[in-house]
Amino acid sequence: MTSACDDLSSAEVLEFGTFTQVTDYTDLPFPFALFGQPATRFVASAQGLIFLGGASLFVATSPAPQRPPDARIPNGWVAPFWDSRLTPLDARRSDVRVLRTGTGATERLVIGYQHFTLRVPSETVPNPEVRLSFQVALLRERQAIEFRYCQLEPGPGASQELRARVLGSAAEIGLESAEGDLGASFSFQEPLLSEGGAIRFTPGP
Image (cartoon, rainbow, N blue to C red; front, side, top):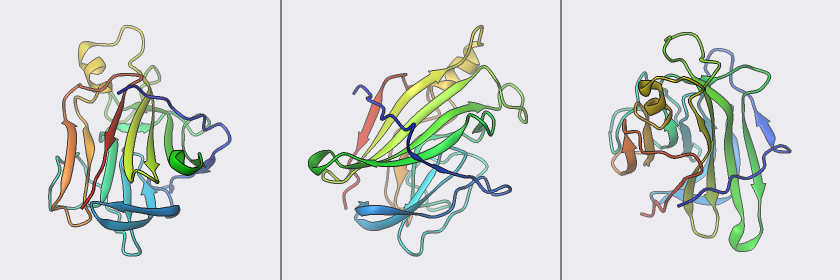
């Protein structure tokens, strides 16, 4: 399906911890469930992983993405672009934003990663040419989760490897239950994403 990214220019900015690279707990504004389990809050990771759960939500990062379902931690997540080398481009331009918008059947909570990049080819230095912006929309009435890919730009003269990585060749795109026993994966380390594209999941019980 095609993507229609929301304008997040007026949205609330969520800040990453200095050492943890995850945001604080943020409450969901309406009832939602992940694989039948109530979710009341979320935490966003700089690796493109959003933890979604209730009062006992446990946050634990991993050095590499995992294909769901997988009982190993972390569990209880949605992953629009889980890549261990995903990182903010810089503190001035890169952030995660959250916006509640729409009414009735269109009401949704949108969590957006804006102006991120990859530490490629270096493992430590962000690539200033890569531009990644994507969103996760929690759709209240449908109880669905939508991934939207607003910008997947490898930069001029990018290698074939980098072009593939920008499209997900080292990432997990999917979601997993709090116990790690249920999951849905659009792709695991395959370059199947497209700029302007969207993926919708309905993680019912």
